[in-house]
Length: 166
Image (cartoon, rainbow, N blue to C red; front, side, top):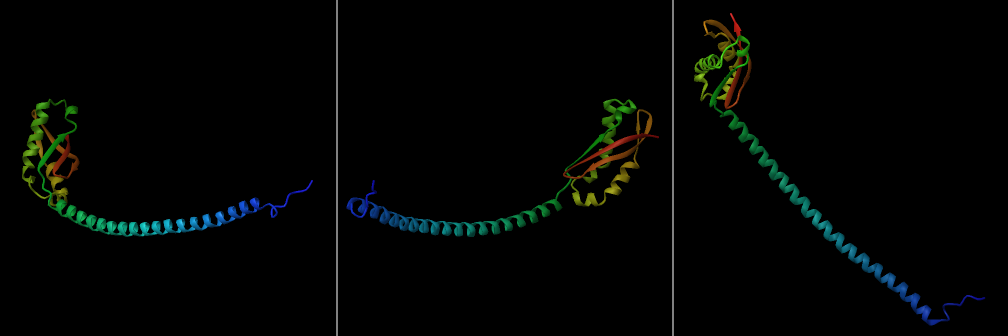
């Protein structure tokens, strides 16, 4: 048995030469289209990188301004309210009225702090603490000294105190 030779049959020769020429042409078309698409992608990436850099620069400027304004605002914060809470009033078997009267007495002494700068009050916190701790309260015919547990400084200053029997 013999293998037929392709160069004798013209149809096979035309078919294979068409396949080869089509493959070469399609390869060139593919390379052209791929190159055009890559060029567009590179241009798009460059534009996006420029836009990102521009926006990040603007964002940095905004953040700096925002931080500066926040710092200025924090310096201008004023105390609007003073809240006092006595944490251990129940251990001395006090009723709610006695605890509320004691809190009001302390709050009345600290009323001068309202509308003062938070920063100024914070710098003098040790003096404030000593002033509160030196106060002696008469509650239900007994004398109590105050001990400051916590002080929170913000527009609403919160002070938590404990009573110590004398």
